[in-house]
Length: 455
Image (cartoon, rainbow, N blue to C red; front, side, top):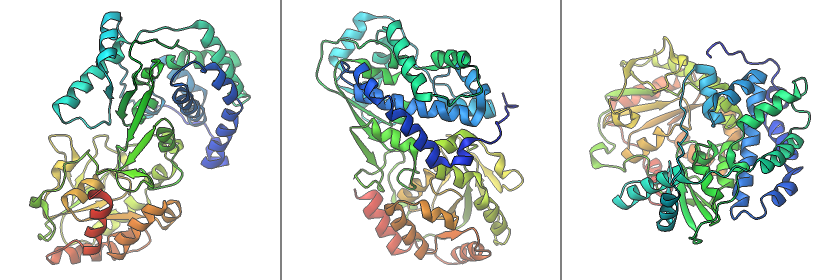
């Protein structure tokens, strides 16, 4: 699949992502009333409708970026997740994650009766109790009865055809219909499942794990209310506007908790271990580490447009490469597990942690450089008091959220953010940091403590 060709004149490039998404919204509103009636008796109807909204936009984007060939391959793959399929289509990287199903009505009834808290990927799983809930949840999902209703599938397909209208003009309508029929997740046309326990099911997760349609989303078929506590699971949330993927996650959450930059509720992140005195700032800096971004498919630009655009333009990569040539010590490269070709010929000494976790390479005496501001490892640096530098474009400032702008202003004032047109300034700063007993500025430490840690 690595020989896949992207179709020319993609409409997101002619319309812009805001207009492209706006057309989706307009078309979806045209079928919302029918969907309300269609799912009227479903206890979790609103969440199912929000899921369908996300799926239709992703399918629309799949065609726009890969054309009919992408639609064909996705529908034939049985892959389930459009976002993950993009890596398979462009790079031949298979990260499938569907949960198998099995029939066991007695086990289903038992698990449903004893389960009032469900944990799926992205949830906090550390205590013995949470680990048990995690196992119960996964087992419950495997035994949820499958009750596909052909008549309902026929109706929902008609609504979907109304939504797309003439979007696939030039393609064989019968072929498009077959592709959609084969691709559409069963949650959208299965019957609701009656259960004995009607108390709410508290579902804790990264909501992206539901939008990827591995099987967790079928919890919404139960006729007990599923209350979704959505948790941030990466570093890019609430940095830029718009971010369609994050919007979809929030739409299916009763409450969504950020890591500090959310304008609503925040909690200290749980992905990385919390700070230790062993890595306190104030030590002599000895290693310079450049953190690499992942190899990302073109499709991701439709879901997180500014974050992915920041990575794909390569301006920051080229700027950092030029600046590192002017620095007095050799540098290290933290190579991403999905190593990107963007760094070919530019790497320093490669760092590949045995654990597979990038944060495990950081230690006191390191200074870290990021060429994308949404890297999750920024938060590991914050927790461990590791000094870091962000390299961005001035145009990035236009898309920042209000809270992100406040953070970036603090970092910029401290000399820890550089623009890609500031030739010679990054290298000058790093050389200065390497020659003194460097201390993270008090204003930066105080901001990080109040916004990301003591929350």
